[in-house]
Image (cartoon, rainbow, N blue to C red; front, side, top):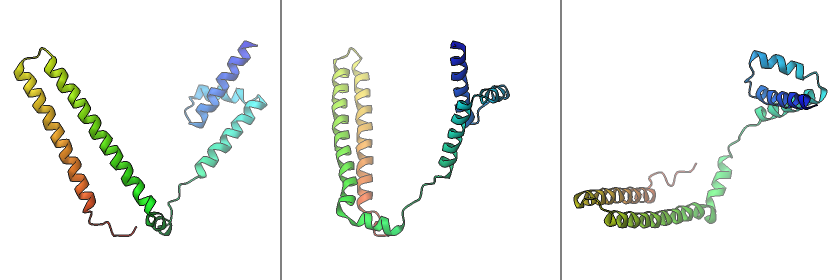
Length: 151
C-alpha cells in the first residue's frame, strides 16, 4: 500500500514537471504508465486545460480615454506624490539616524584618529552626494518638460 502512495506521489510530481516540459525520456515513459490510472489521467487533463487557459490570457492596456479620466482626478494625482514624499522623508530620517549611530560607534572605537577622520569624511561625502541626487531629481520632476503632453 505504501509503494502505491509513493508511486502516486511520483506520478503527481511528473505531471507537474510535464506542465513545465521538463521531463526526461525515462520520466515520460514512467508518466505514460502512471496515466493508466484514471484519476491521474483526469488530473493531467485538468492541468492541461489550466495551462491552455493561462496561455490564452493576455494583459490589455487601458485606452487613452480611461487613462486621461484617471489622471484628471485630484486624488489619483496626489496619492503617488504623497506616497513618494512620505517615503523620502522617512528614508532621510532613517539614513540620518543610522549615520549618527555609525559616527558614534566610530568615535567610540579604538581606531586610529586619522582613520576615524577618513571614514567620517567618506560617509559625509556619500551622504552629501545622496542628498544632492535627491534634490536634483525633485527639481527635474517639478520642471519636467513633457508634463503637459497627454498620453
